[in-house]
Image (cartoon, rainbow, N blue to C red; front, side, top):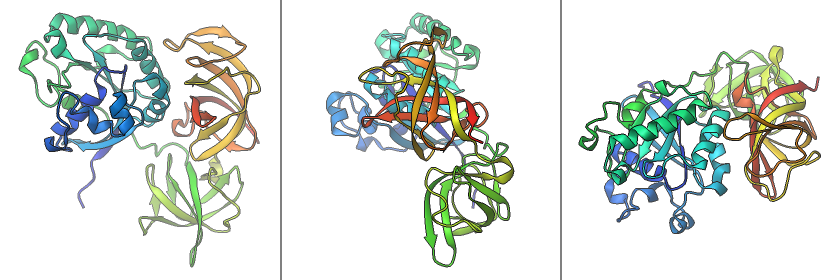
Length: 413
């Protein structure tokens, strides 16, 4: 079998109506994933590829995360089309937290808007370290080089504030609707000598498989299989698991030797990050472990948090968040109610600078550093050490109210 291409997740981010969905749509057509016959007619033809629900088409706004795949000579990509609309930032969080790179779309006729700033800060908070800037709607400013340079400077200053170096970031003049500079250089921007969007994508670096980090496998389900016994199922997030090694499940505390590893009904000796596996552990029964537990090596067990410090962004909350608030934290496969013990610092959401020490409350749009205590044992890691195990969403009243990452854990034992 030919080796599969490496895979990258791409998040398209930016202000509402700056043309993200149109850009993604045209990109998918030009990459050959979708044929022209599938398009609606009229000026919204590309956008409806990504905006598939009726409500989105009627409102003309991207609501949920659409996942589309396309390939180039170098990589296989999954596009996470992140909604720019304020109500839908929650979906953007789940999108960005899975992304290896971001494409920030800024409309040439509109410039940097409040959400452009927010998305840049959020994407950095959530771990996107590679960025491509698309200066879109160049057709609306007559492909003006001056307008392009003016915006390039404005966006450069913005991305510098969160630690990107503009010299390493391509700024591509685009018309998502007309198709300029998506797959081939456009004669309308003969003054531009940089890469097309596809070239810039293929110049991205594929993420390293985090095989050097400690083993962490969040458990999705636990099955009993005749002839095999108890089979926990999960995706290897970090590290490597080999047959014959000793593993422990936390917070359950059950441990034993790995007898078998299976993927797609085939037996394997080794499992690596990204592998969805079922595995059997000697001496561990169906009632010993459950969804939300995390498997790791016995000599470097998953951390069970007694309490933790986190950086969060409040996405939407009808009231205010105060000390004592206890919503549900969704982290890897676990869902545990956690209590806010302390509101330590309120941050400026556009720069990350401290605005206020020990604020009385937090509300929609605030970013903050907080201290949290789980109501029952849960596994969580410092996001700087094991990023895959340090991110979470906070849900309450049927919606995602906040998202964030763990800065520091006080272990339970």
